[in-house]
Image (tube, rainbow, N blue to C red; front, side, top):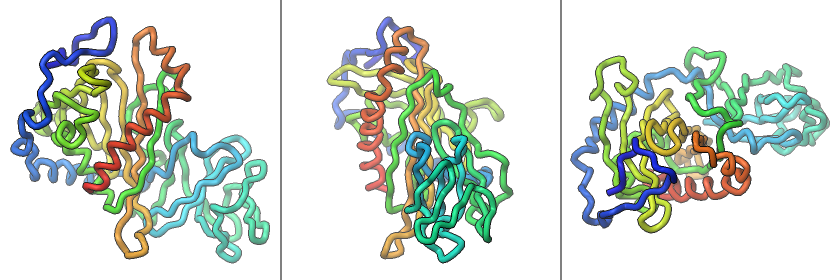
Length: 325
């Protein structure tokens, strides 16, 4: 087995001394009680979202570009104004309904490519903007008609390391499922070493909701000891905590071991149904990795090279999980 996640050596990698083959690891189906997962999902769905929906990655919307997405049945277009601030609103031109996602942005103004109607992000000709927020990693839009909740001024962004001190990457995928299927997937940590043995080994769930005293930080989360597989017997052991701060988000915080403080956020956004009326959900997963090791500055400098690798790793996991969902 690999060393305990709380112990740190001079290098982050560990060698599994007595690796357990996949088919000889302890079954987890008894611990992964359907009722336990369903109750965690129900609690997540009872929490407020403020009607905020993740619509993309901050890096994927540079100035001069547009982003178009249909959240549930609502067309949304987003762009950046002349000062780089995120703007968003209905995706149809208020004149004759042309799709604004195909229109260019000139000096921060969205210009409809059909008849030239210009939108600077403020109300105009019946076009009313949507509240929008850029947290530095992800883009959010507030859709009160879709969410139907009491709106909040800002989205409930999870606690994460400062972007300037971290390496961040965002994966985006689409599944033929409901947002709750994505959330339930992440609230089942027991499947990791069985379904994703190429990424996770030596996984043990050490705490479930209700195990800790009421009001403690771990009262409504799943605590997991797990090793991220690097190559062969080389792993990085950590302790992680899974929580659902709002109905469409699950967050994994690294609470002990290498990269403590790093987070993996999984956000589920309902999309328009497919041509057969089946539900579709966008999965946006943000990895914000940090470390207090002196050499982490090298990783930050190499971030442009690391991001594609981080996205590819998340993509492999989600191809499996979305097929299952």
